[in-house]
Amino acid sequence: MERMRALINFIHRVSMRQHGEATNNISKDFRLSIVFIGRSEIIKRYRYGYEPYINYIKHAIEEGIEIFYVMARGRLHTFIANLVANELENQKKVIVTDRYIDKVNYNGSTIDVAYFRLEKK
View (cartoon, rainbow, N blue to C red):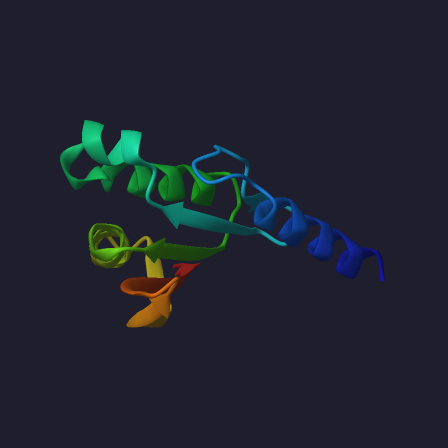
């Protein structure tokens, strides 16, 4: 029961964060991290903004995190999420165990969305 409560608290904390807010989306209890692609300052500062996400995931693997949920919304962000998943898989750091890329209706507009589940190799 305590583990379930910890998981619910983790998901609640992540879901309540403000857009663009840098939060610790890591649960060491469950060895997982939720990675949101799309912080504009990262995308503007770096080549397509994908290196910081790759470095973040590599560092988290060193810290014992084994599962990553990478999520993105918008054409550029879904493109970057796909680059991150492919690059880490090519580097033999992770295995992509689930991949979902689609277009959805959101607030009257059609937008691209992406979700990847990565597991430490």
